Length: 286
Image (tube, rainbow, N blue to C red):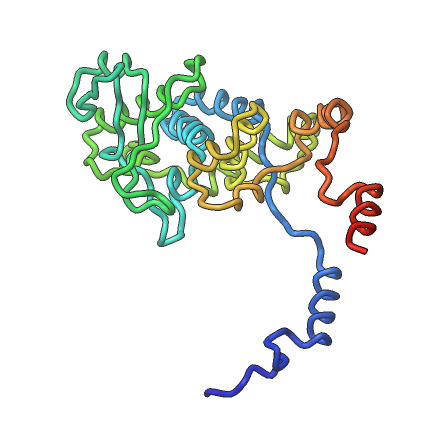
């Protein structure tokens, strides 16, 4: 309406009374609620159990947990969700390579698929992704828990059931087409946490499927991967990534005290004249 903001002083600053009131509210608020990263043994245990299932939901679930962890994906990118803005990766978004040779993954023989040693996912409308850009990973060194193996598993299953190119990777066929959901993944992870969680300082309420993204980032941080590379892989455009990481992780803080002891002895470059120099300069000026 063209009126001045009644909260602001003529200087443009917030009125001191309101500023103090808001500060008091912030101090009274409970700590922010955020999910915690999940230690890798819990994720792997969940995947191992699901791979033992004869129902196609089990192996599909294991594959999607694997992809979510290694590629630092958002839940709607690897599991069905009610969020209308979610953009899942699809069969046509997959790129498999043997060395520098790209495979025609929709038509090449299966033995060529299994020989792939690099797997990429292509961005289309995923959040913070550049359309047409690829995010790729090599083999992990463990066939049972590997991003390349998980991608190949999904391609093989979808091809065997003649899926269309735009079929999400989280889809599986059991009499009809079904989907792995975020609710199912959260339930499975929390079930494992009820069993193994106390060993790692976790309770089921501490985690959800959103934990998987921070779990991958935490694994990289504990592996001393620099934060710029973590941001690139996870598509964080700012230091927002730090909200997902916890200083409670033992490998992150275990050596901090000894590092401070080793490197706490330093000398400052003086930016003021020495007292004797100040006296001499004063005499000259006088």
